[in-house]
Length: 452
Image (cartoon, rainbow, N blue to C red; front, side):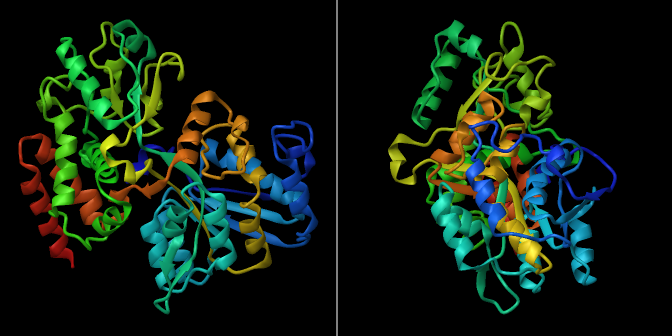
């Protein structure tokens, strides 16, 4: 659901045709930042001339053009013709296509839950032990990515069915460097320091945070990101996994504790611009604007990497606004550096030599670096050159991914729709409105029990 705020509204897009060297964004061999050796090595083993590869994915508009700039190198290396398509209702379309027996060769989706459904019905091709080992060895927090990509097939056995590609980071706190410098504040490295900074700003007579949960019919979702980040910073990753599957109840003390951690920030009138009463009614798109007021209405804002789209026009990231990693607790060092995020996963929905070759292509640094060098792309691939990132903020976010010891997908997106995009959202609105964490958690669990 949250992804819909990031995707442009567009009609069905379809383009086809083989790309040649003239279509390549960066000429092979010219810029030494790119790993051209990986491209040349890939070219040696994949001759697919005369074959066609169909790809169905979520990218439209600018992202579609960026993806095309990447797969042009696959076309150049293999001679294959690619036909890419997307749809505003791509989630429904892929279900229709697979059920009809006419899926694309490769399908790319940002919903692990839907991927799990497709795998359980036998619509996906396992990617094999070699790809599983590749992810373990080559992606930072490799086990996390293997876990995310593993689902039960029609036979009930678990296998790796997806390849994570193009990741988003949510564990970010935004601030104005100029305001920090003027006030003498420093970027916190631990959650204890973040809480101390929050108290310091309040003691100085200012409001530390801007928080807004408003989002029309989706009001409440920004709070779920807060709770998910707090779960990862207070509990082991396996507890998070059990929570999103309801293998531990929503009203388990671990979950109630994470909700209360969010409440420490959001339910204190001294800590939030407008006071706690304004949290639910403030639109999430408007809430960061307090960072840029003069004098500032707040100093900190927790939100994912897309939020600069709603900053004032002309805001320069890295100068007028910057971000830091939502820090872990010093007292819970054993939990490492967890990162909350989202992203897309590529699957083989029609087993062809070209489809298998495309998955192999995604294992080359060049398949990542070409998009990295432009915009809106992050990767946990350890072998890429981070200097190919198109700007310093992207590089900084990429390094957060590379330093992660655990990555977990947005929890509300993994839950059933009636919970993750329903009871959890409304429960968070009730929570900031005055209900206790345990009462809210009880109500969400009651909703979960009703759909079992």
